Picture 1 (cartoon, rainbow, N blue to C red):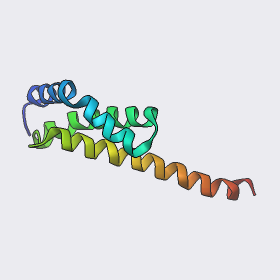
Picture 2 (tube, one colour):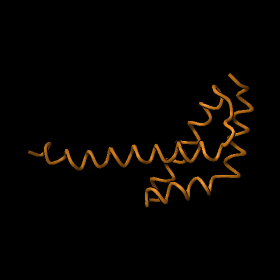
Picture 3 (cartoon, rainbow, N blue to C red):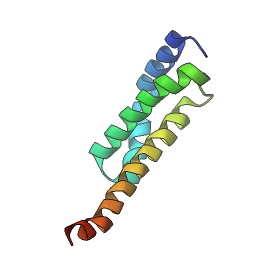
Picture 4 (spheres, rainbow, N blue to C red):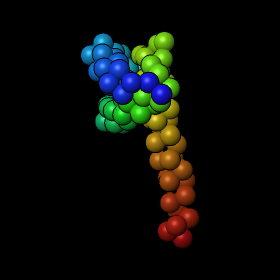
Length: 91
């Protein structure tokens, strides 16, 4: 467990330095700005919790990009599943 202040400071620094890069990488995957923004915000919120427990990773931008992309993929997969299953609910 690391210092909560250090984790928050690392997230704030990563936000200033890498927000646009993380967002651009996520938009490239999703082609949806709203979904990408939500996913990136979730990644930063997750970073606050995880980095406090596990410490700040060596590559914060990479960690954030991976977390945001995984979140976006989860949302897109759920939407695809709903599209496939919705006709079964109507029937």
